[in-house]
Amino acid sequence: MSQDRIRQLVVTVSGVVCVFGTLLGTGVIGTRVAESSGGTLAADATLIAPASTAFSIWSVIYLGLLAYVIWQWLPAHRRDDRLRATGYLGAASMVLNAAWLMVTQVGWLWVSVAVMIALLVTLGRLVDHLARRPATSTVERVAVDGTFGLYLGWVCVATCANIAATLVASGVPATGGPSEGATVVVIAVVVGLAAFLARRLPAQYAVGVGITWGLVWVAVARFTDQPQSTAVGVVAAAAALATVALYLRSRAATTATSATARELPAR
Image (cartoon, rainbow, N blue to C red; front, side, top):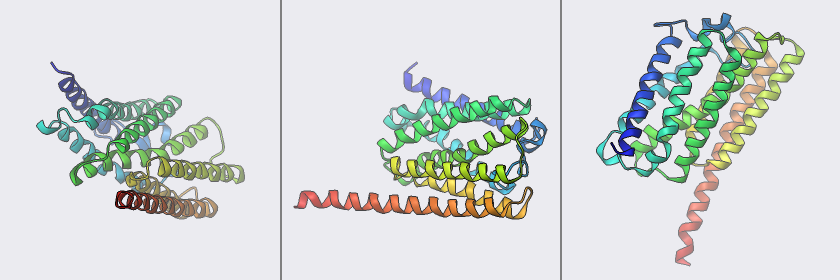
């Protein structure tokens, strides 16, 4: 069996594992994430938890992952260099997602933090590989770059929410002045991460969409749900706008660089 065939099978099996984890996390055969770990991961558990509507982004991500699994099986893509570079990372991201859902079922919150950080690093490496090898079609940009870019952006916010929930479960107060201050600092870290990714991966706009989506729903939750915090809501909304500005600036810079590169031969 060729290495390409093995990679395709590993990606497919990982997709099946991801489906199983999803069935656990959505309560089909397990406990819903919001209700697992004593409700620590619910939308009203911490100041940085996004509103429950935010998690609808997973429907888009899961559809994208399904498209990716199918895409890599197409005969024309069997020896595709991009898929060779990202296949095992994509498989790892799906297994890690399932692992996170499984460990939260049994309340292993600090383990869930470790798994989430591993997922963040894996997706960062994967999207970096994609950026080095530009997509050759619109379908590929949507099914591959769009899926994993959105996945990475959302996980940037989800990682911070996961850490905050774990700290609260460990005894750190969920509300109050110090908690609001700490949450503002964490949101600043998210914006810093967005700035780094916008500069490192300027053409991967879906990353910015994922981060912005998470921050917007953090703001909505703090204005409309418990625990309410006008300060955190305002900061989260400002952070979402800042992320949009960072990616628009990144896009403008990339366009200008490309235009300059096209003009040079003519000169």
